[in-house]
Amino acid sequence: MHLKSVLAILFLTASLPVFSQVVPSATEGGLPLVVGVGFSSYYTEMFVHNRMEGPTVWADWNFYHAPSFLHGFGIEAEARGLVFGQPQGQNLRQATAGGGPIYTLRHFRNFHPYAKFLADLGGEDHIKNRRLPSWYTADRWAIWAPGGGVEYRAWRNVSVRVDYQYQFWRVGFFNTTSFLNPQGFTVGASYDFRRIHAR
Image 1: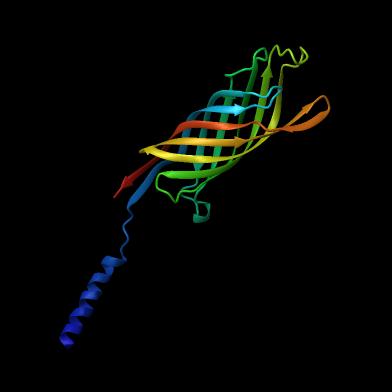
Image 2: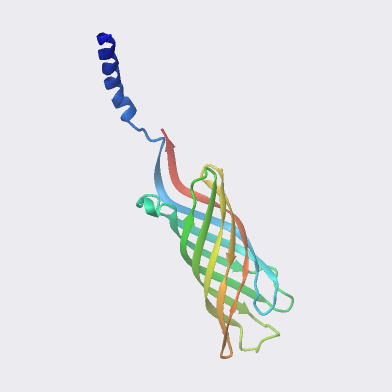
């Protein structure tokens, strides 16, 4: 009985280093950068209430290697131009560009919900607009744009994104100030420049 106890202790002692070693299943390299392109459809609420479409591009810089309390956070830069679907006789164009923080929930393998809050500069061009004075053809405003959506990893480093934004345009017309709220969706694809190596 004494010999069995000694052998059991020796076996456990020899096996402890094996159990104490943790081998990572993967390592990451490359840039913590995601770039994407998509197509947007927005309800403009500018002078006329209609829906316009156009291209959108974005880039996310993520804090993958930051302290744990920053995991999931990143900075997004985004630009959009709404040039299609102009109302008849308006010749209206709308563009926004800016950036801000984004938080992505990465607890799921392929689905990544996210929320963001962007500060943008927005512009309206309305050349030859019959409803406005001939000298008033463009304007620029500051915009706050909360939003969110979900990304689905479709293949390796490529993901599909569906994004929603609700914008706050603080606009002034002839010594009056008001808020307009364009809103809409963007559907597109993005590429993650990280390299993940399995071990």
